[in-house]
Length: 75
Image (cartoon, rainbow, N blue to C red; front, side, top):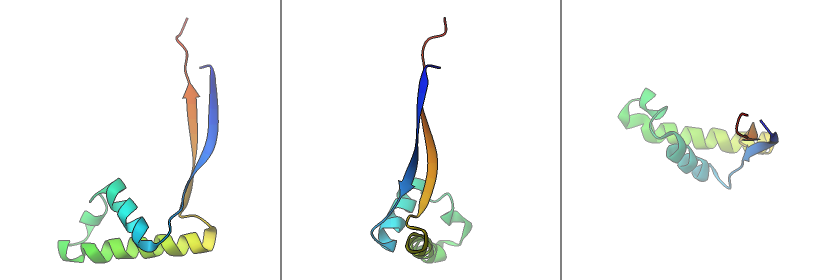
């Protein structure tokens, strides 16, 4: 290992609908398949609303540390 850079990846959105789209594009049906097909629209709506509330309360939907490594050949 030569070095690393650490930063926080922060997710913010402009609306509940934008987070619904992000969630669907990122996770697909991984979580939504836990509800019946006729309730999936309700699921995505609830996820978007929860994310929007969280952002209003905390300033972001989520924060996660990310570490980027620069590797060198072993020698």
